[in-house]
Image (cartoon, rainbow, N blue to C red; front, side):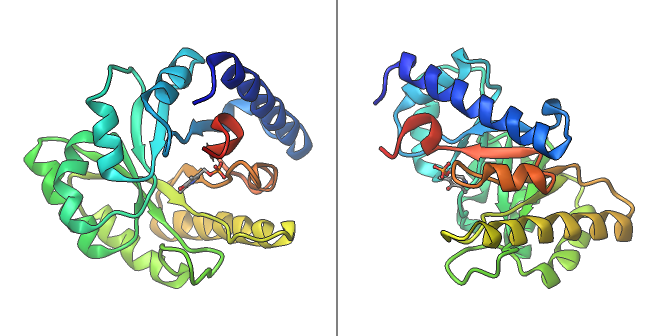
Length: 229
Ligand SMILES: *Cc1c(COP(=O)(O)O)cnc(C)c1O
């Protein structure tokens, strides 16, 4: 695990990149939040994020996150960003503050039922495979309106927006296309359903500039903070 000093340098580099990307895109830096992704790193990574002023962290696997939740105390909120099987919906609806990876009606309904049991309203994003990447989870763009309609009808689900992961590619245009498609899809859905869907979770260490240019409101950053560990 890296030292806090190294983390802090990485944090300053990431913030400088985000500021530059916002300047290039003519956007307010306050519109773009950074979510440190602490998967594959020990609890220290969450403590570092908290100390640097981040209010939430992203975790990829349920069990790994639960282990860290019991490893220490943090004021950071927990966001699940990795694929979730519906048999884990119960514990996830209880322990996580938001689930970014909702991509099926079965999972959505289970999360709603579990959130109801815990007397809460669970925030979610719908994960969209906007790059049509066969290696990625997520809804096809064309299937997203139907799932949004279901989500809007569930009393214990709060739908904040959409999440995507761009296909891995050495050509920047691939990520750019994916992110622009996401923004267009969000705008279409917002108009069609009369809702705002403010959150666009897109962009990672390698493609944050393209994501900011297309309207990302949340960058999920792992390796640029913590190395490849
Ligand atoms: C690991 C992960 C990230 C962070 O990726 P980096 O390239 O390390 O910044 C973002 N989103 C998801 C869904 C991830 O699993």
